[in-house]
Amino acid sequence: MYAAGFTTAFGAHGIAANLGGAGEGAVTSLLVLGGLLALYDGAEVLLKPVFGTVADRVGARPVLLGGLVAFAAASAVYVLADSPGWLWAARLGQGAAASAFSPAASALVARLNPAAKHGRVFGSYGFYKSVGYTLGPLLGGVLVWAGGLRLLFAVLAVLGVAVAVWALLAVPVVPPLPRARQTVLDLARRLTDPAFLVPTAALAGATAALSAGVGFLPVSGAVAGLGTVATGAAVSVLAGCGAVVQPRAGRALDAGRLTAGTGLTAGLLLAASGLACAMVPGLTGVLLAAALIGTGTGLITPLGFATLASTAPPERLGQTMGAAELGRELGDAGGPLVVAGVAAATTLTYGFGALAVVLGCVAVGVVAGVRRGIAGAR
Image (cartoon, rainbow, N blue to C red; front, side, top):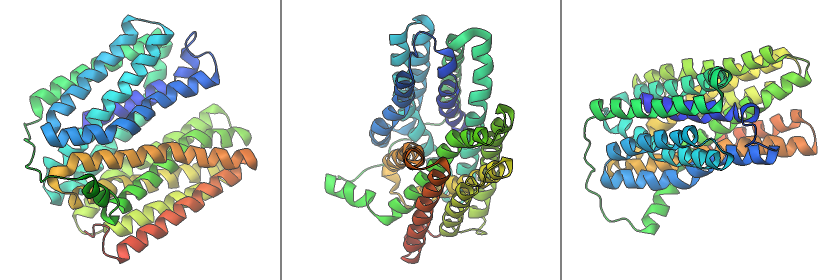
């Protein structure tokens, strides 16, 4: 399961970070680059809830295996047919495949472990995804330098096959649970219940801060006269803090040293503080922002998923995880849009400030949900 999480993170960021410099002939403008980047996330937004529901119906293991095989096949498409049109097809196929195996992996993490260990296992799952996010741009850049974009796609194809074979051998069969009939109204009520909305909103806020930090902290550093090495190190600090904090936060939740409501609120406030620090010019502001955003998102991610797993109907776990992943994808797109939109009208400093205010409002909503006793108090 952890390897599946690593695969989707490595594939998403490894290619995204190298398309602009390595896609000669295919990436002919910033508009084309934006379209190629949006394909992956767009497919996930549309398909994750669908595949989550399918996982509940037929079992998460087949969806996991099928998604990994499809990811390998989509990656191989561009290796075999190096052309701009096939690059679009491969990127779309990768996003659709990740939409299948990502929520299935989350559901299996919850189904294969007792509730008392959900914090720990989701912390570890988030750690390996963070490693994928960190290594994607770095190792992807090395592969592109050595053999071009086709080599990177070839490595992703091999990775998808290897993880699929490993999962086939190591992941036990988890039969789907009996499900009561669910109407559209029942689904709407469950997805608008604060027990779902509170952790999902926190996860979306965390992803918004993470995406904005990765995208705009280098810009802020460049405006302050910092070189690419310094700004790259800042982004690595962000990812590193998230990777270190997630397992510890999960263990603290399982041990009762931390409640979900307190952790989600603290994580949002830390991320908001990081965005506020990004308003400070120079290396100090960039590094403080990276550390606080990374720590805040690392605190939220395992607690949010553990809370969802503990409050969702077991027979609807895949659907719940898929819908929550949709919330994260919306945050992933919305965070940079808020920063960019405000920055276009004013400056990047005010863009960071605007997103910090949004996260502060989400934190207030989490507190309100906890006081009503709905945020999965553990």
